Image 1 (cartoon, one colour):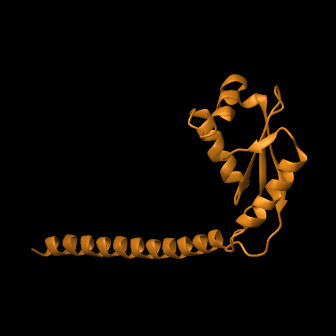
Image 2: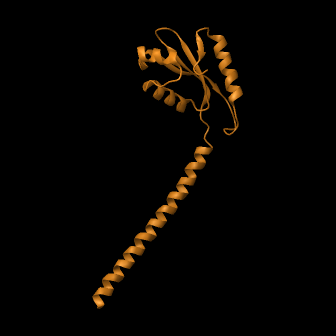
Image 3: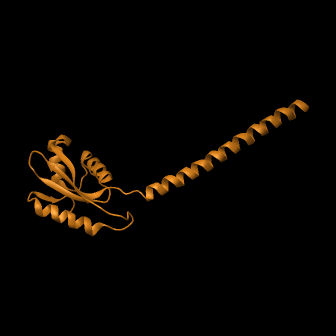
Length: 141
């Protein structure tokens, strides 16, 4: 009977060691998760007016964004899957492809508080850009 208890005891110790290590790792993961979440909440993404300009026709489509990088990715994915809501932009994209467009951020909004709503300021910037270019139009209605 004795060898059975020794083996059984070794398994218990092994199991407790594994559980303890898993708990320690999960605790570390939760701390890291909270840290990363805090960094994400306090980040200051680039806000501004972005542009899709067709090189062949000269048509310009302007949009406002609270995160230009994310919105470029989103719009490019919609255009690539032929599901963009702007039909004219989609037709030009289908005809000329990604290489037929110049993508750029025309104006960048300077701001201090990332949690504040900057929509009105972004719309004013877009209106300035629309006024300066006669071939420009809104990307979204």
